[in-house]
Length: 467
Ligand SMILES: Cc1ncc(COP(=O)(O)O)c(C=O)c1O
Image (cartoon, rainbow, N blue to C red; front, top):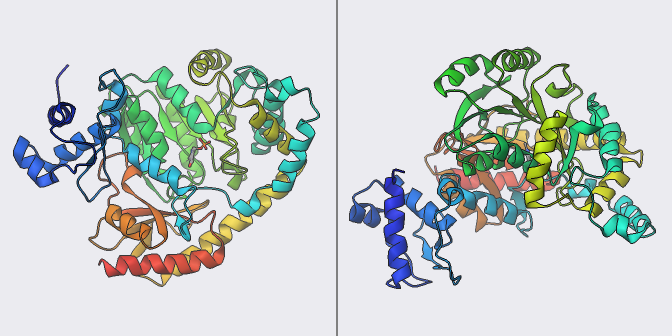
């Protein structure tokens, strides 16, 4: 296999680290110096650094030179696995940053997309847990079937999916550890390195990370106020050989909040059936809308993903995947390679909540809260000319905004973190490496109104300062 320029550079640096000429704690020479030394471009140097980071040799925060941390103390030489190689293009550091933001004490935290902590039904959880302790302990703390407990799949079907006007057969439902696991399993099953997958552009960075980690080539279809421009699919499919699937979030997509219009929903379904290329529908924010998912259309070529992460709690890690039974059987075998089954305790807590009879009230409250937060955030942004939202008519937790400045979003992200202010740079949401370099994602779902007002003003000042 051909060795790429960045791999050559990474291998040279790695050799120097392994020989002990550079030690843990040392800072590597700058991007410019490294580029000159190896006769490559600066972007090749950055890819080489990402490669070394994914293999554990360095840590690298953008804007500075990396610090050496390796080589690993383990006796086996670190190999550049296919995972390591592809993750060098998929910004693994970004997701680590995002997950760290979930526990950050920062005062203004617009980085991670979480439900409002005040919506978490803590008292209900207490009651449910208390009751679980009266069950035979094996039923709560023991192993359980890989597909998910029957009673839990039933509750998901009757109390959650049915509210989305979608009632698949019980043998079509797999309980997953969050919807990202479902996406990973599907990608592992269907994608080999070099295969093409089609996504909206921009789209959920976690999905892009999964696709790239499996070696997929991403073809991004631009979105506008009506969602993915599905009329471009045919050309994209022809250009990209035969894509393995189209990944789409039809409702309140992350990061823009845009939903697919009724006409485009129909066209997308027709295209999938006609081309035989399946759709993976991510319905994480579906609870914000009244219309059913694409997967509820009879005969639709759609594998469906949902999660309780955005409506209830991301920490319990309960999601589901809906697909034809033969596909479910294959995915079950793959899931057994990673976690045997989704946590029995988490599944039962989720079931307890779904069966409490409060889901409708919870959904109405959630919709009202998120709509009001977006409205507040948009109002603040109207007072500044440095942040332009992708749309003012979105739903959900996020505002994707263009920076009307030359400063890089990655740089502002770092600066913000020194000022108690977190948000997500836009680049990792792009199908192409620099599609959204001048964009940032602001998550308002978990921030009270007052925090949104003061935090976004602070953000606007930060951007203005670097204009
Ligand atoms: C569109 C979308 N899908 C999936 C996920 C991941 O969800 P889970 O916690 O269920 O893995 C997220 C989280 O941000 C998301 O925005």
